[in-house]
Length: 52
Image (cartoon, rainbow, N blue to C red):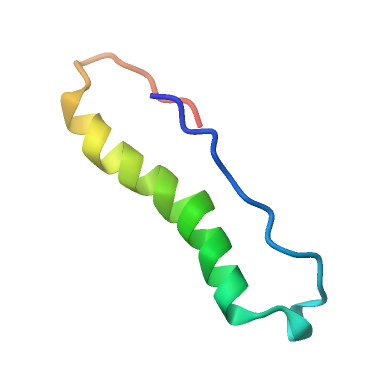
């Protein structure tokens, strides 16, 4: 499995950063990889290594 997709969002001070943009960045960059591992890992044979 190759999990290398990601987005940057916007450049902004944290107090000004829109919550919806942050949620989108987390959904793609964190949740997307986690979901990939969740559904691929049961298919892996013993001894397989995963590198993120």
